[in-house]
Length: 80
Image (cartoon, rainbow, N blue to C red; front, side, top):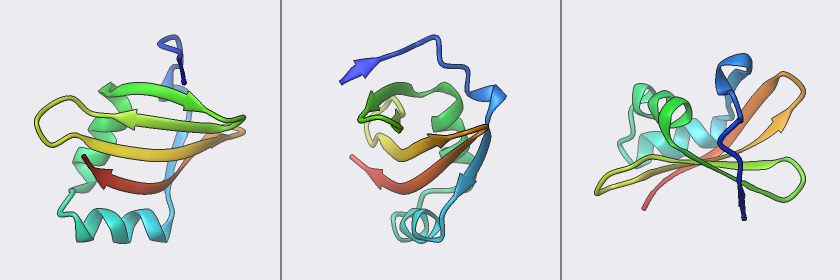
C-alpha cells in the first residue's frame, strides 16, 4: 500500500453509503468520529480508486472508501 500524505480531503465532499452508516451504527461509531477519522487520520491508498482512513488510538476506526471525481464515497466503517 502506498501512503500519500499530500492528499487534501478538505477539497472533497464526503458521502456515506447506507451500508457504511449501518456498519457505523452497529459498531457504535458516531458520525463525528467518522468525519474526524477522515480529516485527521492516516491515509492509505489501495487499488486504482480505493482509500482507507485510519484513526489513531486504542480502538482505531477504519473508513474504507473510494475517490470519485470531487467526492469521497465511504463504503464501510470498521473498528480495529
